[in-house]
Figure 1 (tube, rainbow, N blue to C red):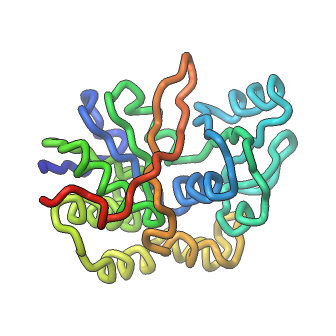
Figure 2 (figure 1 turned 90 degrees about the horizontal axis):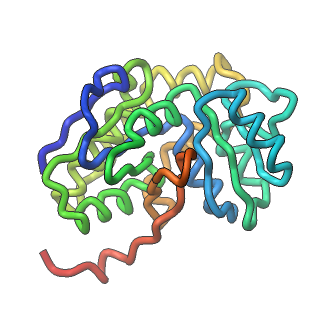
Length: 233
C-alpha cells in the first residue's frame, strides 16, 4: 500500500482513498458519539451552517470546539460526550481541523475518519478494500500535528502488518503540543480525561465512513468483524 501523509493545504487532487485523522479531538469525539448511540454525524462547514441545521432540526445535537455557546448542545470533548445519551440521534459537528479535513476530500470515492480509538478497524477496512494508494490527511497544525501523524502512520503500518505495536506511536501522541494544551487548560471546553480517552487504542470495533448524502457530508459507523474472522492473508 502506497501511503501519503498530507496536510489539508497540501491536497491538490482528489485521492482515491482518504483517511482523515484528528486524534485530539474531533474523530475521538465522533467515535464516542456513535458509542453513545448516535445514528449519524453531519460534518458542518461552518458554525453558521451547524446552527442553521440545528434550527431546522431541533432534535439534532450540535457540538463545536472551544467553550459552550448559544445554540450548541455540547462541545468537542470525549470526556463530556461520554455521559450523554445519543440513542438514535443525529449529531452536527463543526471543529477547527477534523471536519475541515473531511470536507476537503468529500469527492473521494472512499473517505474514512479516524483516530486511535478506531485505528485497527480503520486499518482492517483498508485491508478489506485492498487499497493500492491511501492519502492520510493530517489535519492538525497544518499537517504537522504529531498526534495525528503518529496515528496516521500507525494505521498505515497496521494495514500492512497486523500486530504492529502501538506504544511508540502513542508516546509521540502523548508528547504532542495538542496533548500539552489540553492537559494545561490552554484549550477551552476540555474534560480532565480527554487526553487519556484520545490515547485509547482500538476502544471501538468500527471504522467511520463519510459520504455525501445530498449536500451534506455524513459520517456513519462501519462495523468490522473481529480479526479472527478475516480471510487468511
